Length: 264
Image 1 (spheres, helix red, strand yellow):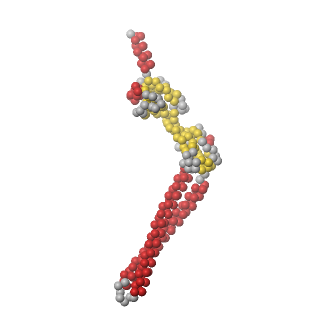
Image 2: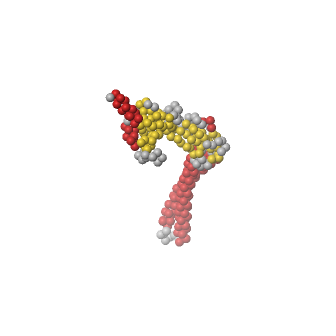
Image 3: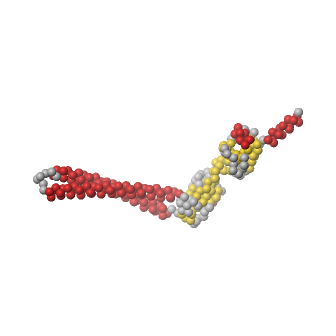
């Protein structure tokens, strides 16, 4: 009987779900150039270190900043011109109203000659044309201001994208450029890792899916409170008849360690 118990325990141990996974960072980010330009500065020594959130790579933005300053001055001038044109339009509208009233007053008078009436009508039409011209100028200025505001926003965005930083707390793994290089849009600049947590990826057999979600997870033969964070509902394309699963754990002191994972 005692021998039978030992055999049963041995069978249970052999049937236990055992997997091995390497501890990886939570995510990897590959930062690419959003705009073109020459690399003016680069903190190459940051490779392998945790980012403090500062600028890592600076692309040349001198001309962009000059164009931005010029565009901001033009925008300021356009706003002043618009204010003056609106005031001019207001005066023109008042003149038009006066001309309209003068013409309405004499157009039916028999004591006024045809020449006098025509002159008043011409004065009215000239005033109306002036008003229409000023209204058109106001609309054109509004369009110019809108275009200039868009240009300024585009330049500000371009300048911002030329200062490449890695999020604070991320590991700067590799930089792909050197000072003096010219990069185009889409060029790889730096790879960085989110090391705030560790990630284990395993491929569960069909029989182990339920156990992985309801059982106790053992890591290196030690029971833990960890749970499987995500299980894919379809079998993996490379690991046939297996379901990909991810487990998140606190950030280890050192990544890439191979861990033994069991579900019981």
